[in-house]
Image 1 (tube, helix red, strand yellow):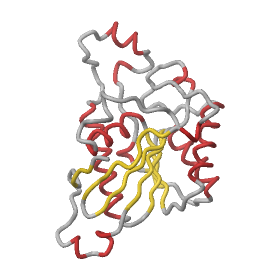
Image 2 (cartoon, rainbow, N blue to C red):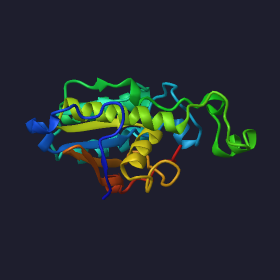
Image 3 (cartoon, rainbow, N blue to C red):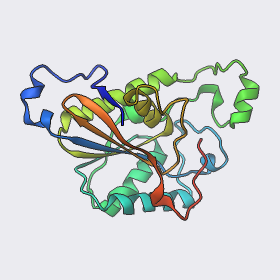
Image 4 (cartoon, rainbow, N blue to C red):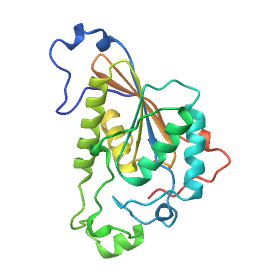
Length: 222
């Protein structure tokens, strides 16, 4: 799949190519959190701390079972409750003792679109401008910044990240050169996207995988 150079403010430091980690492959799995009642109702929940519903917990359980087949060195999460709760459930299954919380991975600020459905948003803001909402550009910039920092700090490791639709799709949009991700493709709840970083370049290895959720109806995409 698509490759892109190391992007953002956290570019690889000078001389990094001589470090053995620069030649090692860093593997990152981006996991979208499990379903909440707001997801089920297709309501935009933003940064509000809502718990997973029962289906969401089952989605995370299935994701964790799939991920348990591989070794992981680090588990990282958004501080937003639905993501952090998902990460804690995964940590328990994988016997990972610590979840690192990264503020730049938090959910997008929805502004006045909070708790609205897509139809309600279109009706209330027909010009597409939602007062107080965070731009998609800002979401993907901060998400990519956090990803670059993790890759630099943990070169050659295998990293699990639990985050949100806008952040994951923003990263995918950047790595794929705009071919996938934000505004182009839908990211399923409970899906797993895999990236690889080596010699200063990101590669999209797998996107929006949901085979581990077979037998469950996939969650709504809000």
